[in-house]
Image (cartoon, rainbow, N blue to C red):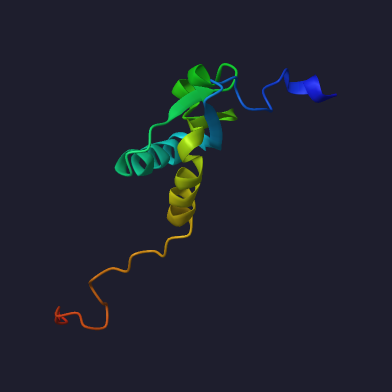
Length: 107
């Protein structure tokens, strides 16, 4: 029963010098991940599962996923960067609603 999805449930084939970092399923998550890795100057390779690139273009997501690979020599660094991003605290807005300087306008 393992071949139910014709191998699409596992990572795409990749170069032996690379290791799977994560799998993403939509354009937003992929764009953010690419930005984080590029910001840290971590090289990466993206491989779509199955016909994922065609499906992603048409629908904006793929149910098969997109695998993101990094060199084995820096996979731990990439995992730390990814984990730090995923566990980051949200940035609070600078404007407080309690200190609003807008006065009430009477009709």
